[in-house]
Image (cartoon, rainbow, N blue to C red; front, top):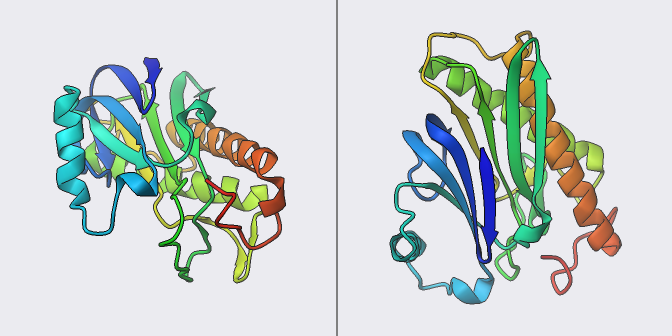
Length: 225
């Protein structure tokens, strides 16, 4: 599994085609893919009247990445985090970018239309073959780990501790297989959860160090990516 960064693009090569489950802008749902890509943007790239899906499709076509599961973020791609966790012979590898400029607490909603969206985008890949049902369960574990990591980073919003951002996206990848479970009591669930937690928590702390004025305060739109 290899990663290449050539701003404004970052490409993760999974090493072989895998089943990938996500709600990414490009190729969402349950698909087979080998590449996961990130595209760094700013609000100036995405005016209000722009058809973002069409624009992004054209961007991907121009760079030969139409077959990739693809994310958009305003987080500086140079701040990505990569982690590996192995439990009982099962390995999970996570690659993530973590920005908190449009941080949100679940069950609340804030207007961030004026701000570049430095969101959380992550891909976690397992080396064990999963059924489609297990891949769905794995996605739930990844979301749980993301939320725990953001909460432990301690960003206080007017409605309470942030649990994520308004535009997070998660992709979970694994070979097709017959393992039916990926919950917290399984090696694959533990490895996946640890890899995601470590990547997002490290990324959130990086963001806090870069923007210390935001920790514990309402975020300032003129300073936070």
